[in-house]
Image (cartoon, rainbow over the protein chains, first blue to last red):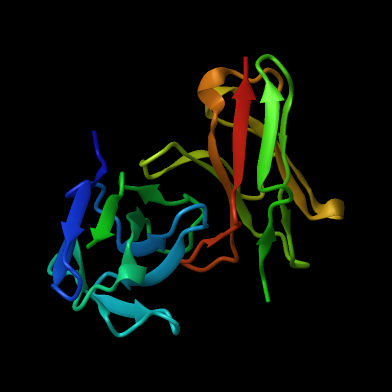
Amino acid sequence: DAMVIQNPRYQVTQFGKPVTLSCSQTLNHNVMYWYQQKSSQAPKLLFHYYDKDFNNEADTPDNFQSRRPNTSFCFLDIRSPGLGDAAMYLCATSKAGGTSYGYTFGSGTRLTVV
Amino acid sequence: AQSVTQLGSHVSVSEGALVLLRCNYSSSVPPYLFWYVQYPNQGLQLLLKYTSAATLVKGINGFEAEFKKSETSFHLTKPSAHMSDAAEYFCAVSYYTDKLIFGTGTRLQVFP
């Protein structure tokens, strides 16, 4: 089945140690998104790629970076994780041209910072 | 600013009772509207969507939602709650861009 896969499901990292989360999709969707979701809160959009065009949200900290080497893969890099970055990170995809189809989400990566 | 509001951060119902989760959007132009469900430690799963076709939309797991332009609402309902419906529910809107705007979520508890 076509899907969005996030690895790993659970990630523990040390304070200040760079960490990379990965997302892959078999849907061939043009748009890929990264969301941060803290406990009992709505998902917060960090950035998204429309094909290779990167779109950063204005309030996304510089500590967060992203790469999309090809259509199928997208990575979230946290350069120096702080305790406040502990959260669920959700990857999603959609077809281009507006979101009438909705998003397809991965199962998420829960990041713990120790 | 365009937004979506979910009334009630927690809703509790008995098994077999009606489920009603409220969602209101803020714009004069009807957006695309979505309901997502999130189970613990999982991603979000699309329940149903409104994209300017039928105003009564049926989704998965017996849920449905009715778009009411006059009330700028898109409330989610299910006639009879099941224990497996316990989860977090998010209403979301899209104003014809590539971005979804999420509400703050409603946690549904179902008691036996």
